[in-house]
Length: 94
Image 1 (cartoon, one colour):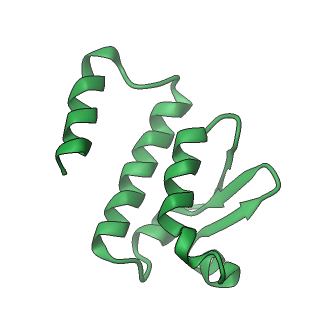
Image 2 (cartoon, rainbow, N blue to C red):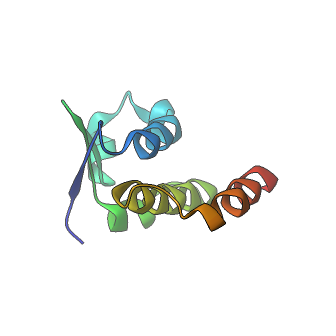
């Protein structure tokens, strides 16, 4: 899978989740680029496949999967109304 650019204006929730996930590792930008996460002036370049098979812990990789789903929803204008509560409840419960 190729890298994609997530622009800050278009993917704010996705970028917030990824930033929180990788905040502890920001001291190592080269290492982050190696696993598929490279901040840019206007967002971030991300390679979902590389992030998903990186040295992140299994729960961190699960958060990457969630972030990828959020990016898909943001790209389409948000979650369908019928799924919003169930998705929020599922995340909150875990």
